[in-house]
Length: 448
Image (cartoon, rainbow, N blue to C red; front, side, top):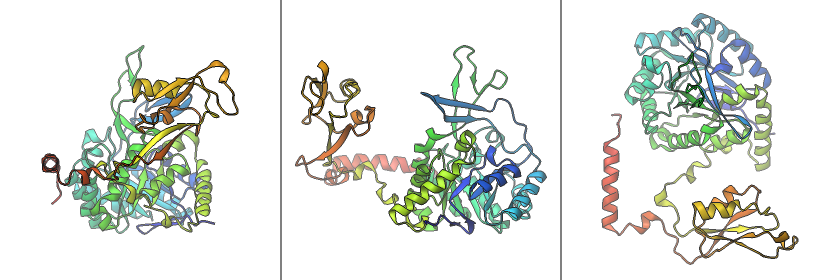
């Protein structure tokens, strides 16, 4: 049986599945129930200065019968008294000593405020802290959350304040609402952070009611930007995770990363871990399906590891990072063409329409005899002109039948060369790239 236990910068957890700081971790009752169901850890809903929340708080994107593909929220940090939260954190940790209990904190940008909340929280016996530098709504208008996380110097400064008094691991939670997420990540490293978590929610407006013209969610006829989460943000989260995990300064510091953003299944979790996260945090999926989804996550990851011979999660964490590259290093000689399995084709012609209208016009409709099917009752069949196919894969993407259209590598005789290699001896091209690169570097904020 695979061993799912992790040691996250000194924080022990029976498995990598944690609840993110959000509504599911708002109370001791919820966190204890989650641990009973099998969750390995929980990041408590952010505590700090008292807030007043509003109604309605959530807006969603539903797509073709699937609910909550994306979730927007305008909920703030915990609206319960700090003392009540600290009391319940202490009780949970006492009842579940082998589970990870992390306190998420956010206060105003004053040294004494940050250090006081850390000292008070440490007395609960918690395992560590997560500094919320990512909340994009409500708190950011007050100079907290992403308003701090978007400025690397602030990230570094507050992390240093906390590290002066913290005796337990400190995780810095990064905002995705920034041009280059590696800079606040490096600032966290410079500030002495024990670990990094990402991503927090993405700034968004969910939609507009076409009858009333009101925004979603609707707060008494008004609305505004909120934090976007759910399955739809997963590709963005994976990209930003890989950018941080691949950054030389983060790698040199050897900081563990907790991955967040659209995780709903064990497969999602494995993808995050292959791109560098040691633990994964889940929120929207629990708000949709409840705590018991962790049972499938544990079983799924365990079975996958057993099938591949992985004894611990450390055997595969980060395994996909070496495959991260850039366009300049892609093989220009690699060529594929589309192959249609006519025995599986249902003659919907979506591949033909997509190719003809939106790609490279290399699929024809022909009257042809098909093995095991016959003439197809007079309807036309899609046939790929391979000599004109550029291998874009749009046809296989739109095809509703699994494995009906596959992309097959062919040998065109073209040299296997990258753009960087091709332009290495072209000074007029490399000069232009150098100018663009220098401009890009000059435009960035640097931490000295």
